[in-house]
Image (tube, rainbow, N blue to C red):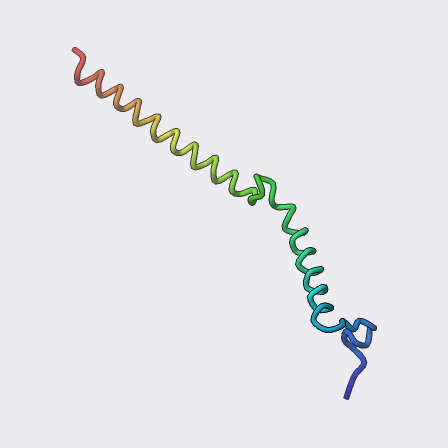
Length: 80
């Protein structure tokens, strides 16, 4: 019935819940190390820096054009 494969056959026999928890913590630390390379903008993904720059550029452009339009319309309508 036992085929001889699996963690018990390889000599890996965790002792109680503590053994399984240590195995899971090793897996989670390896996963966090793999994803840690993607976090370079204050602990956030690199895409967030790109998104923030685009949002700031869009707002700067919108309010800048709005100001230019007000100046142009003031000059055209109110000044002789």
